[in-house]
Length: 391
Image 1 (cartoon, rainbow, N blue to C red):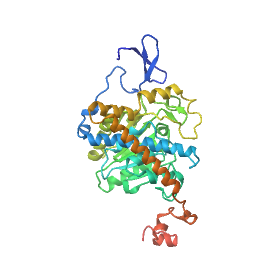
Image 2 (cartoon, rainbow, N blue to C red):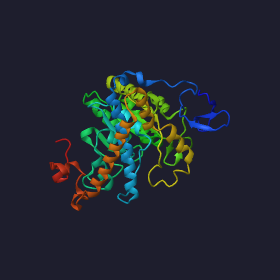
Image 3 (cartoon, rainbow, N blue to C red):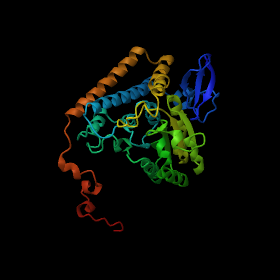
Image 4 (cartoon, helix red, strand yellow):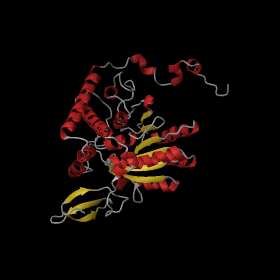
């Protein structure tokens, strides 16, 4: 325990808090809900998967996180400039989850997620231009302007999109994993969901099927503490942590400090190895935090949580700052080099906004396209409206 700290205070939420001895001032919150409070944090930098990282790869992880941060900030700026409409769920504060987990994937690994999908899209290699244009509803967008913020897709990158129905992606994730197993592919499906989705029936049905069929699916709960505007404590009944519910289905699970890139990679790799070698599912709960509201329409973001809480997380738990400092300590990065990376990310995001602004809207005649595969591909079923399965 730090010298200036005399005690841990366990709050009603179950989250331990450091308290300064002389004043009783709360220093910071720690989300160690499934780990003993006095247990030291393990250093995962020596895990095999992390020991293999080159300095260049470590810097690339920082670059991807900074690109997501700057893209999201530019998106918010343009939304406030009335350049786009509809929903906008920002990923600011959670960048280490998407980048850390996706950095491990191979050719036969797949990704599917919920509606807070911008970070995952950039992490799998989608470009800022196509992503920003989709927010603008432009024809140059990744979904041709028809999906918007919640429906990015890139099948060529094994990215099966963002999905707007809470937990609606979880059975699809099981289906992708089933397809991998059926076709004899050594792969896994990373299926991301929020902490609010764990109470949906579709999620539990998916866990049941994943366990019954031994599917190589990894359910990643991005626990940012709030289901829309409701805290986890008020919305979910659980023993210790949400991932532990997997025990009811005989599924392996783990709790992960989502702000630590090394821990994210080390524990996710264990789940990937399990999927690849045993074709077994895993539930991972990655503790993280979002700096803004549930979406830009969330006017009460600083009502159901205090500005002080948000400030503490920004100050002590920002994943980009923590990883940047780690690279400074390891001697892989200088402050000047970090500034250059940040400047490049800002420039790229600004250029993406200009690209989106100058792009055309979809033609009205395209409204009937991209609805049915059979129609778009001109198959017999698409021409006749009939499909005979037994012919």
